[in-house]
Amino acid sequence: MSYPTVLEVTPGSPAALAGLQIGDSFVTVNGVCPSDVIEYQQLIDDPDLVIETERNGVVHQAEIEKRAGEPLGIRLDSSIFDRVQTCDNHCEFCFIYQLPPGMRKSLYLKDDDYRLSFLYGNFTTLTRFTELDLSRVVEERLGPLYVSIHTTDPTIRAAMLRNPRGATSLRWLRALLDSGVVVHGQVVLCPAVNGGEVLERTLAEITGRYAGIESIGIVPLGVSKYNTEPNLVPHTPETARRDLEIVTAWQEIALRRHGRRLFFASDELYLLAGLQVPATDTYENYAQHENGIGMVRAFYDELDRIENGVGGEMPIVTGEWRSIPAAPALGYRASRSAHERARHAGRGDVVVLTGRYGRAALEPVVGRLQNIAGRRFRLLEVENQFFAGNVGVAGLLVGEDLVRALKSDIDPAGVYLIPDVAVVGDTFLDNVTIDSVAAAAKATVRVVETTVAGLLEGAAA
Image (cartoon, rainbow, N blue to C red; front, side):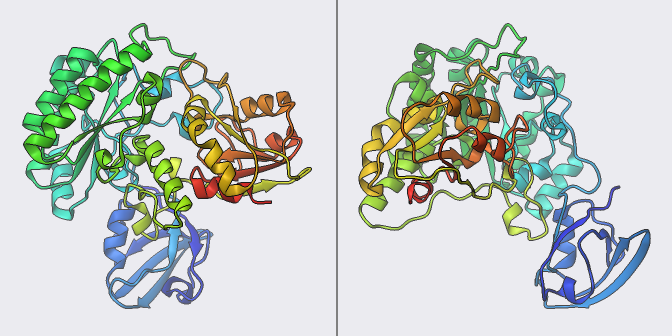
């Protein structure tokens, strides 16, 4: 057991009044040492607390009286206090195996922990799930959970996960659904492995056996230049259209049988296939927006609302960490605060740096963005040479590729806009900082939200 460290203390909160400080190690609540932030939250909801913390090797005890359910007023540096349940699969399509050496250590951690699935929306294969885990999930109503399915064929699933338990672990999915736990699923499509006829059988079996699942996201395989697996063949426009036809057909079947479409394909598949993304109502409640599903349509809808002077919120973030005050923003949830690095700000072009798919999504609406902003927009597609392969999403843009694109840009520019999804804090995936990227630019560099409002705010002089 490792004790979490206090990262923040809210002024005037019960924790602050009791003398808790940033840097304290959080030890026990009413004599109980919580194993994770979920248990911690349940413990501190009580009105009368005795809290033990450790500071400079000395244990301090504080008695706190507060209202039941009132937040204690601290944020911790981790969500799992005992040990993250690591992944013992060796999936041939796992992108972690396709990372270059020398990146941040946290990027190489594979988790298969249902608690992180509940908290952050991470996908779990359930191959390490146990009866004890099921009991806790059901008793504490830890949902929604996010489950990687990939295929319902036991032999193919075991081969894809390179784990014999992959053949049987979907029994836990059945148990979760039978117990009323909300579950969202995912299929990572490897065209030569689980696409085509295998995908057809998977969607058919889900429709029949697992129809209680909330949604199934169908996303394409990512292949970097570091891939060593011969079976990992990326989608072509033809295979993307084939698999989209299958998804669309089973959407209609699920809609007739169960009153909802159930299956949702990623934007990347539509852009690769050269097809328009579906209409708004086909995404239903945008359950897997953060999985790259419906982002383009939600962006277009936001643009419509702004043009018509109508408000409206973007799809909500999945996972429960935002509702647990002590839970830290980890991994891809980490802080992506706005940044500006000014050099020679001017009224020249608003230059949006993005990946291949971002360009395809933005090109049809550039004129509309210009009309609203009153400034000329220009798209600068950044080739992802760092990962290469079929990687073309904005979230995997890295500093060195951005620097190269900025240095080679010879057209007029008033401001450069970089998507915040590529940045954690002040750093890109390749550990290049925003300052280093901005130094290569001839105009102001701004990191903006990947929304219409974010682009327009970044374009403002």
